[in-house]
Length: 370
Ligand SMILES: *Cc1c(COP(=O)(O)O)cnc(C)c1O
Image (cartoon, rainbow, N blue to C red):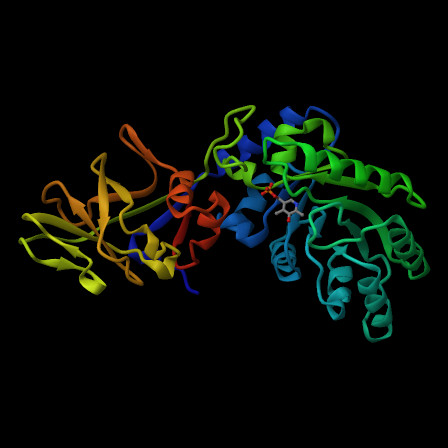
């Protein structure tokens, strides 16, 4: 989708906040572990290339979710190691090898497919892999050491580099540590039973880095906390303050007074019971500003204004206290005067997590960097 810089509905992204969040995590883990910035899904909506460039000197590597995201970074001269966190289709492994992109190896079956493709591919030697271990997430990865060791042997026989092994925690953002501890034990035992230890053994995401920093091994995979958000929502208290990097602004494109009985939006779900000033804002569900935002609020002139009527594809209406000129700023995420609307507020309103709110905001929203 083409972004729309002429619409005046920008996301404003603070690269300084992102850099500060990286530095704070570096201090917090306080040991020799490497920090790899997770910039999958367009850096959680913040823009993968600008974010990667801004932290390039502060981190040791990057994590993405698929090969195309990795290729995008390489094409923009990101030279640090890049790990693709999900399994990829085997017939693209030579692209990864040629661009020095490290792949996640989710199973022996997957590695066999890669090796079987070898003669059709231009080259696999020196392809780096990190073996994924399913210690309880139940998504991808090997579940016993025998499978991991068979993969190491197969990799060795084909000049594929066994560079790392990792697992992913399902509950690092929860108060109850039972599941976390069970996963940790399982992973540590598996690593002990390997034919050899690779360069990188890693397990921690933001939540684990924040609340279980003793478990950080060779790499901290830093995602949501780099963008300044609490991985647990509001469940766990942060050990240090984070700086949210994302704000979302717009402006009034139309202002009018409606009379008693007039309605607003599809389905005529809002009906005025008094003379009401109504403002129109250029954002809608095609931007990821979903229809369930009806009834929530934005900030105009430092005051909360309710979103009235259904949110349409490209526009929505808000209730104003008085007439405001066209072009008056509207804050959808961020601070205005003494009030603030956070990504977490929106997540709570929608009964979801802050990650999803950011990831849904579409490419049509122009990203501005400061
Ligand atoms: C997304 C992801 C991360 C980063 O998670 P955050 O909660 O954003 O820190 C780390 N590891 C894996 C395997 C992931 O998929």
